[in-house]
Image (tube, rainbow, N blue to C red; front, top):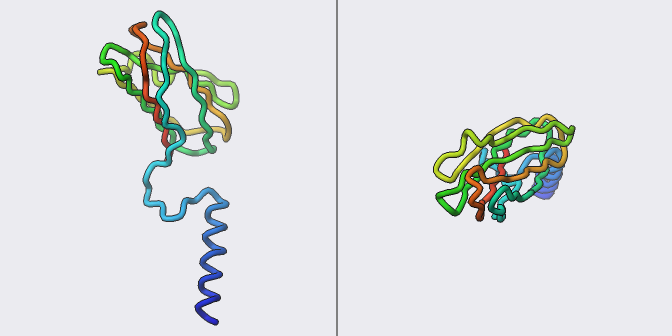
Length: 130
């Protein structure tokens, strides 16, 4: 009977922890919010992706172009309507780019991707959070 109570208590605590956004067995590994490859058109084309984040999450955006000629960068629109170039074109190097920020609102974030070289091509977009 005592073992059954311990098992039930463990299940209840685990359920509550998950309800509060905790991940069972979490060891500080990043949580994947988005992992997708998109196609950015040449000559000023773009691609859009969205992801959800919680207030206070540290969010990391990583862009990796499949062509070494590309300079991927993004324009981020937050749930509160604020917009900024993140990651900025100036930070693109060797077909990669990245940026980190703390989500100030819970909700949907829209990331529009561009290529600073205007060559266009495929870009892997990976968004993670801690």
